Image (cartoon, rainbow, N blue to C red; front, side):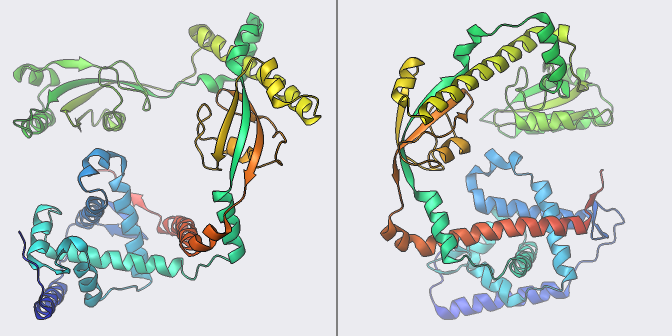
Length: 470
C-alpha cells in the first residue's frame, strides 16, 4: 500500500522535482524527420508520431472517464475522430499563441485525485499509474496535460462571459418542473387494418409514390473464422487471430490457414450495417470492420468479449430499390398500415371536434371507441409514458390547453392520442429559490456546450482537415 506524503516539505520537494523534470524535457524536444504524414490541419502536415500522441491522450482521458467500463464502450467512442479533433484544437491554439506554463501543468497533475494519497501528491502512485494504467511515460503524460490546459484556455476564450437573465432562468425552470395529471385515449391504427380496402392498381400507385420506403441499403456477405477466448489462456485467441491475419498478408490462403489450425470457415448471409450479423448477432465492431473491407483490404480482425473473428470479404451488394413483384407482400403491408393510419387520424380529428364543442366527454368518446381511458399523474415535458414512449409532442400537448380542455390529436407510434389535462401543477416557488443558483449553473453549462459546438464547427471548417488514407 502506498504511504501518504503528509509533510508539507515533502510535498514541496516532490512538486519541485516534478517542475524540474518538465524544464529538462522541454529543453530536449524531439525533432521529427519522417516525411510520412497522416493528415493535414490548417495546412500543416501531421506526422504519425503526432497523431499517435494525440490518440494516446484521448485514450487515457477515456480511461479516466470510464474506468473499467471502457472496454465495453470503446468501439462506440470513435477515438480516432477525437484524436483528430484534438489536433485541430491544438493547431488553432498554436496559431493564437495560447500556451501553458510548467507551474500550471504541475498544479493540474498534483490535484488529480488518483495521484494523491492522504490528500497530497504521491510520486510512487504517479509512477505506478502511468506505467500500469496509462501505459505511458512521464514526459508524454505531462505534455498531454499541458496540451489539455491549452485546449481548455482556447475553449474558455471562445465561450467566456456567458450569463442567463433571471427571467430566462424562471421560464426554463418552469418548463422543466411543472407537472400535469392527465387523461388520454389512444386511437390505435392497428384496429383499423381490418377495414382497409385496396386493389392492385392502388398497390402499384402506392409503390411508385413511396419507393424511398423500400430502398435497400448496401449489404455485405462475409466469410469468417471464429476463435473463442479461453478463460485459462485469454491471450491465445488474440495471438492466433493476428498470426492468421499476418499469414494472409504474406500470401497464405484463408482456406489453407483454417485447415492448418483446424478451424471452420463460416459464412454470413447478406446484411446491412444496422442489421444483426447472421450467425453472429448484433455486433457493431463486426459491422464496422466488415463494411470497411475493400478489394484491396479484404481481411481484418474483430475483437469481441468472448471471441476473435478473422473476417474476409465475400461480396458487397450495391444499394437498390427492388421491383414491385419482388417485394409485393412488403408493399401490401405498408399500404395497409398507411391507410389504417389515415382512418385512425380521421376518427381522432372527428372526436376532437366533438370534444371541442362540449357535446361529449373524453370518457364517453373512449367508451364509444371501445378504447381504454388512461390516467397519469405528475407528467412533465420529459416524462416517459408507457404505451407512448418518449414523445415530445405528446408531453407538450399536456400543457398546451387549459385544465379540462382537450389538446389537438397527437400522432404516436401506435396511432393518435386525445389528451385532457385534468390538473396543471405550477412550480414550487420555494423550491425554485432554493435551486435557482444550481439550475443557473446547469443552464450556463448547456449554453456553453451549444456555443462550443457552433464555434468548433467553424474552426474545423477553417482547419480544412484532410486525412490521408494509408
